[in-house]
Length: 143
Image 1 (cartoon, rainbow, N blue to C red):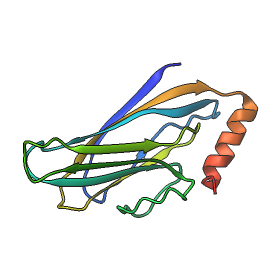
Image 2 (spheres, rainbow, N blue to C red):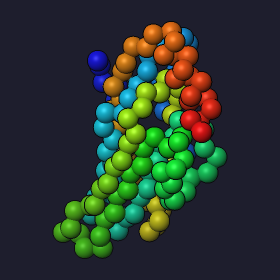
Image 3 (tube, helix red, strand yellow):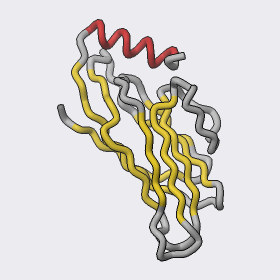
């Protein structure tokens, strides 16, 4: 199936929407890849936590709770004070199919520097019954 890519930059505390929903919900998506990249490489230390949710969020936090079913992706990027060390990046994502818009959040705990992200979603054609289940699951937040 085709891969759909999204990229952007998030400031500290920013919440954004990744629009993937369709009118009939017959296209689903599964996370294929998620990457972070500093907006100012080598400029200063950075600790960014980026999360993607299946339901809208009102606040961005650095706390990651894998018990929350609506958490689809969690990524952390830490850049040391010493410029010759590369960033430590950890990304974890759930292997579920969604067909509604996603919410992405960013929190920077060492300062206020922005972070860049690159998201690849694998497109999956859904039958009518699969689309209904995915839509209801997304709307309920899988709780």
